Length: 313
Length: 224
Image (cartoon, rainbow over the protein chains, first blue to last red):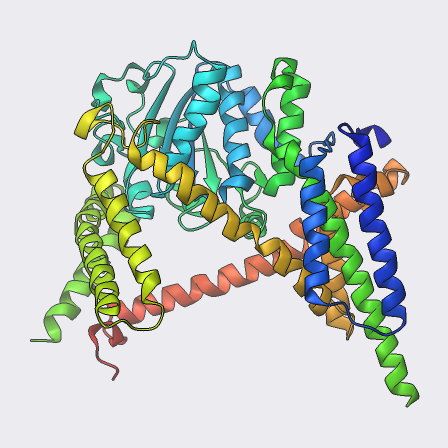
């Protein structure tokens, strides 16, 4: 199982960073045993080192795909080539570092399988982030895929769940044209798609309101369309009541994005050389989690020690 | 009449929308109301923008504390509004895609809005670490349960969780940290989330009925 921890990168930098953190934690532990609290700025300093060290000296882990993520991967794999899939970019720049890697991986996977993709957003900030995925993934990695034949960009539409309530049964009522003002009726790949209930799968990437939950309530359930979610780690727990019946799978946080990227490379080795932000960001996340856990332990040592001293008085 | 007309409109529209969900031929009623809502919501954009301008212009004019920030807000608002409304720099012109790589809107979004948003969110890592140190203390039984659950989830979200417990035989694989983290999410967390959701759902139904039947009138500015 240790092969799950394939560490690559500048080993000297990694070793120095880990030694710095470990040494600092031991020093803090000794201070704590003497009954001294840890100042807030010391904690901030440790988090800074834990996050920046793996960025300067990259550490990459090989992730094992969990069942809840695998369900999404397998669903995209199982669809026949040429199926029409929608990817909704319902997030803002604050959430983007966590969920955009998922959107990129979904896009890559759909095109690798030969699916047709409908891109859209029900968040005002989503359209610009959608454009970023089109530029960095679609146009760069799949130049042979043609707009309006293999993919279409519907852009942003205001109205939150009201938009979803309409497109589930009539797409053209809410989106008469695509983002470039081309009428949907003249777009070949949408000839058979009159409503979102005609789609094979919807990948709702977001985490706020409206987000994957609204896609389930207004499109998935009434239209009987399979929905999968990509959400920020803090909002993923709220989606579990919908799994596995109403949401076929959930990607929650950067760990899930990394798992999906690992699974993509295992299945499609040609994507080994593309940028994998999910896997790249697992280094900082892992070290930051370890530092937080160490501080929790130190905090409890201080707590129990002071409790014992109070009881002795 | 001042009170009866709004009450009647609320009852009429509410009843139609309920009917549109349960009666398939009436499905399009709900869709049409969503489109009407969208049209009305456009006026809210004007109202919001107008309010923002008014409040910050007043603050600048009267030189109230931190009025400099209001200038930043106004400049950012007006520049973004002009870039988006007139699609400045857009190769497709006024009818083209607002977010093409060359448009001013996209350049401003990618180079100012995106880094600012990400930075603000990233700062959370520092506060979460500090809060964890101070809050996650085993003061009593409930706090200990919370502490253990947090610890397992934190460890389960890293590859170290896999490494530390990979020696556990397959028949006891639930005890491996990543599987324990999944169990917490899909067991206790699920139960808690469902309870909250069902409670909220029942609350929404009861409040909706009160509004439709005219029992709840606070939305009319009437607190009786």
